[in-house]
Length: 110
Image (cartoon, rainbow, N blue to C red):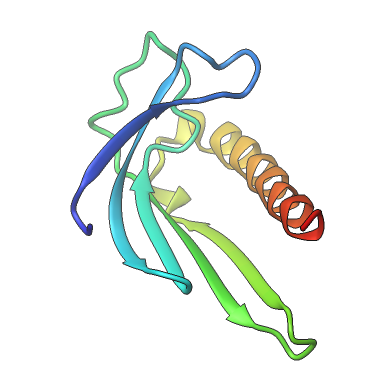
């Protein structure tokens, strides 16, 4: 539900001790999912709570070929502190590419 906060462990190798949290912004089943979080907040020695969050938006749309178009957009990197925005942007861009590939593999394996 919008406004709800949830946390979980990152299950990528090397990041297992890191907890990440998201605040649900919007949830429309079978169409839209949006949340706010602190991008690439993986240093256990850093308190990210005072930073502004980015917005992650996933959408599903019908495509002309009778398939589904999946889009993932993360915005708000201009609000990430200058000393870490480049690395956060680079790592999240690479991460979203990987997650979209995971979706593709899952769907095509059906």
